[in-house]
Image 1 (tube, one colour):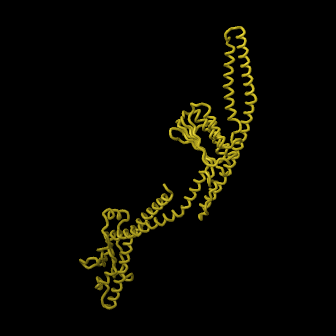
Image 2 (tube, rainbow, N blue to C red):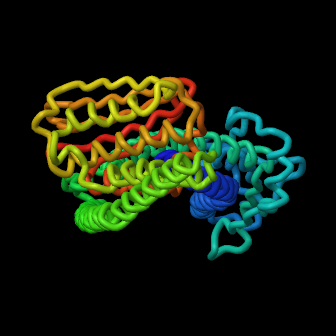
Image 3 (cartoon, rainbow, N blue to C red):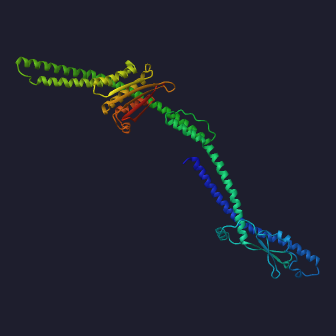
Amino acid sequence: MRLVLQLVARLLLIVSLCLGAATVWATFDAYRSVDRATAASAQRVAQALQAIYWHEFLLRSSRTREQLLPVPEWRTLETMKLISPGVCVEFQPAIAFEKPLCGQSEGLGKVPPRWFTAIVPIFLGSHAEVVRPVSPRAAAAGTVVATPDAAAAISLAWEYILNVIDVALLMAAAIAILASLAIAHALAPARTIVTALQRMARGHYRTKLPRFRSMELAMIGSAVGELGGRLEEATEQRAALTRRLIEIRDDERRALARELHDEFGQNLSAILAFANTIETASAKESRDKGSKDNGIAQDARMISQATHHLMASLRDALKRLRNPLPDELGLEASLVNLVDSWRSQSAARPTIQLDLRGDLTDISGPAATTAYRVAQECLTNALRHGAAREISLRVERRTGDDDALLIRVEDDGGGDAARVAQSAGFGLTGIRERVAAAGGSLSILPANRGLSVAATIPLAA
């Protein structure tokens, strides 16, 4: 899941929790606001009755206070205006059969659902009546009793909650949209960092990142740049070490070729000369005696045949061990010579097609040696370890900004590309090392009825 979506989901969760908390608070506040309205109604009515009481008391001073009760004419429209909706007020002591004076409770809000009507009183409790004296200085003046209407209180609470939820939902939607845009804008540089890391994975270590305003992203960008520099230095050091190892190995190959030529070659030549001498002497002795071949000449001929076979194998080994032909003939001529040598060994061998593209005349040095070794090893593997009937060797020079040499060898001899790619044989290991030392890449992929080995060697390095 994308980080932006995760942050937005968490933000929505937080907003939902805040919305739930606001709903609970609104329910409590709306429900208890009825208690506050009841107390305010009782206080306002008590003050109004107090004014009426003292006014009547002063105008009718001949009467006693008891004769002034109940306060005359208190059930007026002006008194109704002092009573909050959903609150009923009565005067004590009340006249017989006198009903409380109630504020308007119709149309206070939508009818709440039954579950809300049942749950709210359980958790928030019931409302208590409020008693206020008409006059603190005259206890006999009577009292005002205000009682809230429970149904009206619940309706008011439900209407308040609906209003709060509407506003809260709009705010939550606005916060979610604006926060999502802000989060997406803040995380936009992450895509640039990921792209830089992907380029580094492909070998472009010197990937410059822009300056980020965020301190954390700036630190990440700095770390990525430093990592790219260290990777490039390590790659260069590894390539230099690999080139040095290849040079040492080539020196050892040349020394081994000299030893084989000087020691084994001369000894094999001597064995062949001795075998020919024995064969000639044995044949002459048999002719002088007039007898048949005594078997010595036949053994000598077998020794000569075995020696010729060893000398042929030695010549093949010397060809592989000595300096590659590109140093002497150039890359193009050495590749032609390589293919011709394989073609001439046996008519029954697979057909080898050579396709040279581009200008190869100025390619020399390590690049030419690496290309020749790759072609030589791939052809050897295809001819010796496969049942190919046709082999294609393609060498192409790509010019322009991407100045590189592409060597591709394909055969139709079957084979498992994944198994060959994981092989730890000396041949593949050697060409991998050479291609890596040259700063190139090697791939082994399945082809039409066979395998395809492709190497890219940069020429600009």
